[in-house]
Image (cartoon, rainbow, N blue to C red; front, top):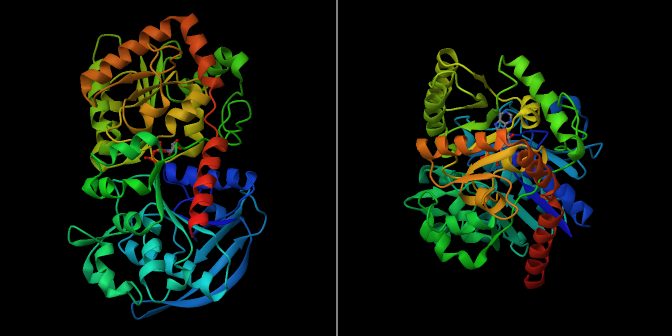
Length: 473
Ligand code: ADP
């Protein structure tokens, strides 16, 4: 069974958030389950692409409106990721450094999708499943059904995975010209609320859609940035599959990025050493509990409320916690962070993206804070569990599906209901109590580290879904 994944991100080639982690790991576990999983992403000018060598599999041209574009399909030579990695190179459009945020993002990702479909047709590539991730490849299910240029591929089942329904790839109808040979009577399949909405088009046209946790599947029907009615209508095609983690990369026993490796039996000492290292680097007090936040500094992550809570806690006399924040995102939140760092004790921040530092923090922190307003799955809490770091999470989406509160039987995390300052402060207070109860903390760390959130189970669930779709094809 040949599964072709289309995505904007794939770790370690290009990662901005959880999408990169998932597309860098799920295909590897699908290969282990016997599937021929291949990933095709845009070619970016980044460390990975500069260091690796590639073979040109195919070269041709596509038209984006009336602009002729040359493209190449490149194959990474060493199978470094445990699956076949293809990169779609379009000079001047797709060989840039950043993944997102260019003004011509529509042209970029549409050209990428057109090139992949063009290659499949011209080279007669045998594909059994087209698996599209988020809106960047969201036009594929529409194109194979309703573009005359590509509907020779309409028999291939399409799966769309929603990693984050907040971002939908809105595009003005003025740019409809980028869609080649559309069957105009089906224009409605692209539309939501008067604009082209690529995520909505993907959900409408795919054979099945998945969300990255079962909880998020339900949540989208009530809270999905305007698509609630669509998810209600299409729910028969939906299935929630919880993300996993890749223990080849996320494992405190073998992780080359952390200061000291440790396993369950040495967790107390191991975490102490990692904490001492990071506290020295960031001028924090290793004898106080260390609360960390890692992530995109955006509204959906509840960072505004987190900062209010942190200010409140750190303005008490001689505060008894440390806070370390790693993230980048909205300018006003970045500025607020720097202000807090300069004006409050016991806090440090790293504004930017730093993969290695994130590993060090998962290993060093006592608690990972996640007050998210929206969290489709969340990977931070899963990495935290693996590193014996207690997740302190708001009960939403995948956080609710993966974290059991310590007050429940066999619980191992701290949960709270609202993304509000006082709920976060209360959760920090509960965490402190746990921190000072060394026996309970030790036991909980052992429980957390023994949990299995690896990809094996989820990879099987995806493969079962593909099989079901292929049978009905
Ligand atoms: P999302 O995809 O919404 O950003 P997830 O929890 O699914 O959130 O995944 C976030 C991933 O990105 C995790 O691997 C996390 O460690 C990583 N990450 C987020 N921000 C940073 C950062 N500033 N530096 C390093 N890693 C980061």
